[in-house]
Amino acid sequence: MKVLEGVRVLELGSYITAPYAAMLLGELGADVIKIERPNAFDPFRTYAADGKTAPFFFAFNRNKRSLALDYTKPEGMAAFEKMVESADVLLINVRPGVERKLNIESERLQKLNPGLIYCSITGFGASGPYAKRPGYDNVGQTLSGWLSRFHQQDDPRIAGPAISDSVTGLQACIGVLGALHERSRTGVGPKVEVNMLESMISLAIEPLTHFLFNGTDQPLYYRAAASAAFILRCRDGKRIGLHMSSPDKFWKAFTVAIERPDLSERYPTSKSRRENYDDIALILADIFSTRDRDQWLPVLASHGVPFAPERTLSEVEADEQVKYLGTFTGVDARQYGTNRVPNRAQRYNGENCSAFRPPPGLGEHNSELLEELGLNTQAIAALSSKGII
Image (cartoon, rainbow, N blue to C red):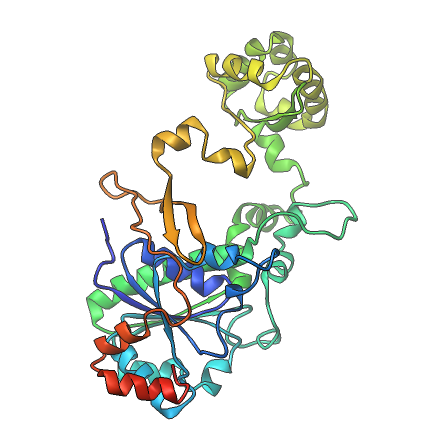
């Protein structure tokens, strides 16, 4: 089910935030057109550790058509304006002021098309002391307070994938969906503004609210202690994640499962478990080190304990629940080969198929898209000869 079928999205994005938001809209059925200048294209097209493939570009640019168009030239701008006139959404992620230099600011484009939803994604907002600073993923994590919740040592390295970029893309997608609903009532496309800083602050809502209520930071392990959550290494080196939450029934069932009912007597309440989290963690680490993971898993399952084996990324698709859900599907792309990708997270009437179109080559759909604008073969050839496309 393509719930956004008939919605046309123009994406003038690079790296992650705008491309990810556009891809999510495409997975919901929107017609997404990625517009890049021929000599200033998305750097993720060629950003790869092995120099052969571009997995970063593949990750954020499925379900799109590509138009390579130099809209800084008069002929290119004329074609771009025609695209705008028939578009529903425009997504862009640049520093404030860049869009004005490129002559693609919201005020001008929304005069051309009052129904256009213009979504601007920035690092820190449209104005303010940090507005003109470059803002990338780790900047958003650190400034928002998010990263302070995930480290306490002196190691200067950052682990894990991009968080700020992806969360900001999600927030932009949400903003566009809300704007589409608003436009259905008013006929006018609102301007949507999303920035990385506030997106990450919104993600940190729980520890931030703790501070705003109490005036103190949550201790680093406060949330895990309140939830009786652990990640435990078994005898074979594999790990299990546990999350008993606050109901006593899960803790009691867990202590029976591991044959240590005395722990239920020693720590009978959520408060006592929270206050003694460090001691409990050491006890459980010793207990789980006595058996292999495959021995622990059926025991925990039979007692209704909230648990999961820690999967590496290479193991996720083979998990029996993931296979049952049909989460992954294949995408064939000549420049990348056949790749496995996850379907969209949303199901409509039980359907999650994302009808994947592989990431487009630069300018792959030039002729197709320009013909849709009414340009004939000669006009398209003229644009090509001048380097406009």
